[in-house]
Structures are given as structure tokens and as C-alpha cells.
Length: 267
Ligand code: ADP
Image (cartoon, rainbow, N blue to C red; front, top):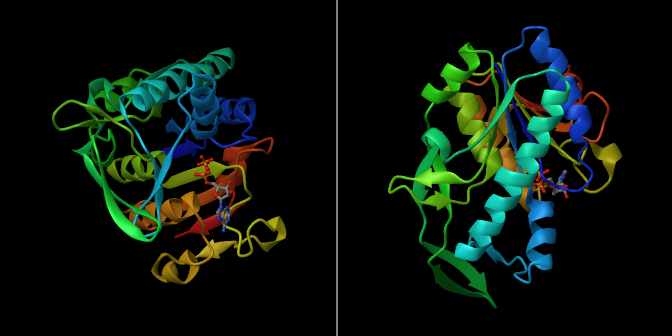
């Protein structure tokens, strides 16, 4: 089994991802796709007059402030636009893909973090009423049913809280949990960069390999959302996933290239 997470940033070549996934799938490779949609969500939120807002947490990580309206826009884009675009591309390639969010069949389950700590002007504040949380469990039953019947699952946030509420969740972490649940041989995190760059945004400074036990040395170079990817990678490898590759989703065969070791390999 391989788990492929396609990012949601500018420049991702979805056609190439779908073509490559279809080729591997038809050759017998078991595969689950997970995707993001952040840049498209920002664009549509702006257009709808509800511009995105981000919170910076005390540890330095950032996340999208998700009130009810943001959650609805998030669902429109992730579960609607992006998910159906990928399902359609796979169907055109002759693969029977099925799009699901973490809500459907409770595939991604976690705890809602109603009160979120954030930093503003150097002070720690608390934002309440957020629809966010992190995936703590992956329910594999529905996915196994689909895979055994020959369907390729295409998964997207949101996740579902234990109380049954939709929660905005980080797609990289969800993909890492999924890969761990299936003891995947590889987790590929494809984005709009060649991998982890020692000297971002200089693409010639690609770090080719990181031993999982030395990841802390590399955390310093990862900025913003890249930090979450690196943390997710370590968790996955420690959880029994064979290897994690940060690969480039702007290239012609993004999945095969990452499987062949192009990008940053964590093992
Ligand atoms: P996606 O939504 O495609 O998963 P993210 O925006 O979450 O992508 O993360 C990828 C982004 O991380 C890159 O587009 C880049 O701007 C940023 N980034 C920060 N630090 C680094 C780094 N050291 N190497 C590579 N990318 C980095």
C-alpha cells in the first residue's frame, strides 16, 4: 500500500498526479490518495467576502481560523471542487475512484479543539468556537471494503469529532495517520517544491535524505506549514511506515519519481 498526499498550493499538476496514479493502480499497486485545497480555499473565501484568517500558536505553528462559515467554504472547496476534480481526472484515466471526506464513514476521527491558544502582539490569547482538531484515529473498515471491491479512495479533510461535528484538520497529519494505519510501504507528500530545502526557496538546496532519528536537526530549516509535514513524516516512520518522501507535484510523473527517491526521503 502507498498513501499519496497531494498538496493544495499553487502549481500542483493534478493531471500528472492522476495519470501517474492510474498507471500504478492498473499495474496492481494498492493506493489511497489524500488531498489538500488551501490556496483554492483562500481564493474562494476572498471572493465570497469572508477572507481567510490564520492563527499563530505559541509553538510557532499556524492554522486556519475556522468559524462555521469558514468550515462551509472549506467543505465546498475540499469536498466539492478539489475532490471531484481529482475523481474526474482518475475516471478519465479509467480508474474507478471514489471521493470521501473524513466525515463519511468516520474515516478520519479526532477531538474538536474548541478553544485554541494563539499569539497576538506577544500575548497569548484564546479563540473559542473553532471547528478544528487533529486526527487521532483512522477507521479503515470502509476503505478496506472499497479497496477490496476495486475502488480507489480519494480522501479529504474535514475529519469528524467524537461528537459527530465536522472539524478542519491538517491533511498531512491525516495522511500520516492513514499510512500508519495501513502500515504503508511509503507515504508521499507531494507539494509545489522539490522537497525539503535547506535554504528555502533555493531549489538547488534540496536535502536528499533525512534519517528519522535526526529530524530535529532539520526542523530549523522548515518554515510555516513545512514544519507540520516534517513532524508528520517522523510520526509515520516511527509508526511503521517504510519511508516518507517529500516530492514535487509540478513534474510529469510525480508519484513514480517520489517512489524512485526523487525529493527528500525520510526513513
Ligand atoms: P501543500 O498545501 O501543497 O501541502 P504547504 O503549503 O502545506 O503545501 O507546504 C509546502 C510549502 O512549504 C512550500 O510551498 C513552501 O512555501 C513552504 N516551505 C517552508 N519551508 C520550506 C523548506 N525548508 N523547504 C521547502 N518548502 C518550504
